Amino acid sequence: MKRVIITAANSFIGHKLCQILTASGYGVYAIVRKSFTKTQLFHGMQNLHIIYGDMCDYGSVLQKIPDPCDIGIALAWNGTRGQARNNAALQAENYNYSLKCIECFLAQGCQTIMTAGSQAEYGPTTKIEKIKETDPCNPNTEYGKAKLKLYRDAVQMCASGIRLIEPRFFSLYGPYDSQETMIISMIRNMMQDKPCMLTECIQKWDFLYIDDAIEALYGLICYENAEGVYNFGSGTSYELKKYVETMHRITNSKSVLEYGAVPYPETGIVHTNPSVERLQNEINWKPKTSFEEGIYRVMLAQSL
Image 1 (cartoon, one colour):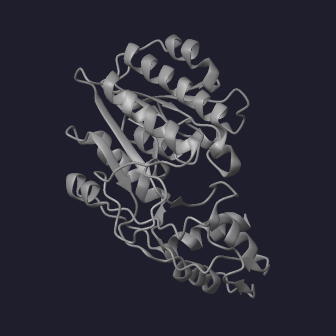
Image 2 (cartoon, one colour):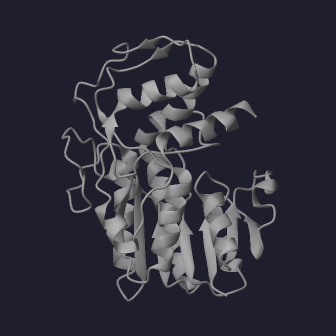
């Protein structure tokens, strides 16, 4: 049996990754925060062991795992939204804890390391053309800078035959995501018929449903030649207005859509438009969930 360590195993991505791995016969060491109580997330998962520890504890907690492991997946990160993205001290702390985490993975015998990259590593993209993995990275937030530094340093740490994979997530969505995300907050407002304050929504955007992202992650784990950076998106992008009006229609909302109420930043319109050809070609993957179906599933979860 192959064994996997996953930090932030209770997160939006983490617990679904635990599901697919345990269902496929992997043994999983699920690292969760000390404050974690919702153990029902892991109900019915075979060969899964919950280990409690915050990021600052990784140096000691990960060393206590009794078995050698094959794969280490580092998902934990604090301050991924809002003003926290430019908190230099917090992002430096994330970098240091994550680097220690990777060191512990290697000491545990992991031959595959997976980090959780971000579109923020590329920096703000004002061009409409799709972003490729080979495009230059110019992050403008402390969050993006710390993520990119971690990846580049991890490349050096894994230079001697260790496989390093970095999925760079653009705009994932799905049930039980953070209430602060654009999709969740917009659906919540629409279901309550509240006004929606928006930019002009003419920027290009690409949304990927969480289940499709998890299938792609699993595909990369299984594909022995997978290595390096992979953009994660659906591969299809539209003006943001199209997504907003789809949500408005599906929710049957009476919300007023106030386009232009939120100004664009002085730096200009930023597009979120990744090329996912590398991901599609190497693991023969394509998303299965339409945006409409994904929104129906989010609505159902919001109403529970």
